[in-house]
Image (cartoon, rainbow, N blue to C red; front, top):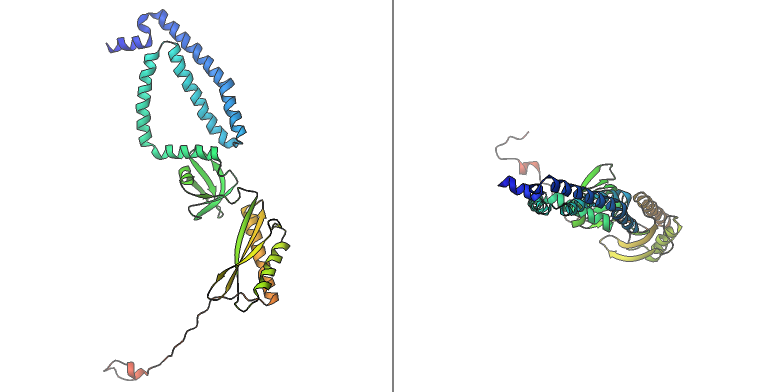
Length: 295
């Protein structure tokens, strides 16, 4: 009875002629749909990716997913066209049960896959960008993005493989996403120093540095009154930011300001403590245990 049911589902119970006819119709429909998919559907998807300026490395895995989708649709429609509808229904039921079991067992893999799709489509960063995540605990240059993981080269030349879900479920900072980047640094001067002179020096050295933009102009604000110094926060902008340029420009600028402060007699104080009180010293006789002979 089971064999008879399978033969009926496949159309073989109606005779070899009907089975051959169904197989021919299935093959013709499958080939036609695959041809249409490759000639029409896939190019349309590729043009849609190009309009979104999707990187080539991101298009390749997504195009593979689209190709498997075309094959699945071709098989499903061809089965119906060939008269194997009942078989396709059984196949869909089995596939749904298998998908449920696989989904439960591979939740993390699926989560990373979906996160990878979001990274490809939303493009929070791209290969070559300098990113920071986990509240700045990790940072580096993006070397590769796949549908499951992103590979980042740290500034210590270590390769870190990060699950995509870690980068979509948490905040990721991309300092080089725009064409310019603002930096801040607090210079501490003594309470007896001239705040106006120090402010002028900080702004002048920013204007004299070729790597710092004139527009927006550098600014200085008094932001801190600490125990041992007055904090002047300098804000300046750099163009086309990259990690190497950011570190070099920032270091050169701070060094130039420090050298000007030294020449102009402006002090950069360091924290100090004043200890008050007395000190008493007892004789050895008063602290020698009783019964111990004196030397």
